[in-house]
Length: 156
Image (cartoon, rainbow, N blue to C red):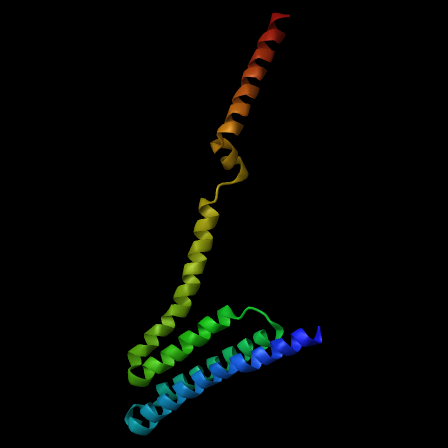
């Protein structure tokens, strides 16, 4: 068991490096462009925004790292990580970049709507039975039998 764990730890170490490079690259570009070259745009909102980017990057990075270490799926963290860095990249050049963040609540809303639609449009077992020709045939036979039974009973 120790060999597989070592292999997994090595893969986690080599993979997480790329996430760190992505964070460093985007942040370096952001700080050089937004702070050094365009100081006038570095206001209260951009400082708060930078804090948000840093928090989300840090949180998703650590989550991906721990997922890698235990061999768990980190797709959800990766999605947020990617949207966060892409947003930060675009915000470097324009405040319209913030619009990309709308993907996150948009995706959540989409999942919720899908859940609701699946619930509403998934037929119940009874509905499935009604639409199944074999089941329908059996039911018709039963009904006919019941009617015949009544008729026979009345003759006596």
